[in-house]
Length: 357
Image (cartoon, rainbow, N blue to C red; front, side, top):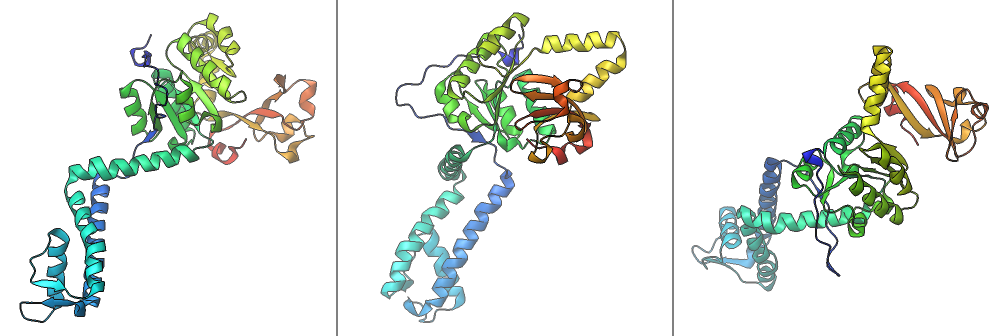
């Protein structure tokens, strides 16, 4: 078993424990975040200076009795960073309220910005938590990947290469190194036990478009599948197993598609025994960088009644109808029906334009 895919155990959540929070890498670099902080600081100072200048008749300068623009800048900087020296003071009720309700809170805000540690552990974390909770409420149509070892990582790489937005991929794993790697790729991540109902609720599995399971151990993957299937009876679930005799239990657990990497490697090897071109073509079909691509989609309304060959964008090879596969040579391929899904071979460069269904 691959070390990276070794499952870990986690204690069961206590009754009333808060649902785990998703994470996602910030799209802003450290310098960009620093620039935003400085920009906020100067914007707030400029606002206070403008108000003080407009309301300059509401202040008294005990030094010379005249309040110049330089005096306004001086008074703003002093009052925004300290409690002031008393040489310039607000004398009207409106000016005093402004200093009490705006300048004093701004002074606290400046301290938090200038104290980088306080910013990181107070403001940024609170903001990130708010963003992730909002994301957790609105996430839909995403792909959930349970297990980010060798197979799961390659699956995510391939999804991104095929044009999937990494911000629509949610990775669940107990390994912190795997979670960090997925987060660097731009995925939404959750370090948690995927066999728990609470974890599946946290990643909004009911609103997901599909799920990929590759936990590294067949028993763990099948248990994850059972958990997901009882929550989402109609969700498309792809599951990877290592042992051939676990394919049936995986399907019994509710997996829509069961992949055995060892068996697939055997198919490629067997195909290569009868010519290198067969194995190369099969690998070409499976890869995002290949010249040709296998594409599955639901037919459009205007394609109902057409034959498979007339409806396919590329080369139609199979119809999926009510759980049954119909080959292009069979009688059922002469007329498409509503709800049919077709599998076609298309040029790799045409894939983004025909990515439907």
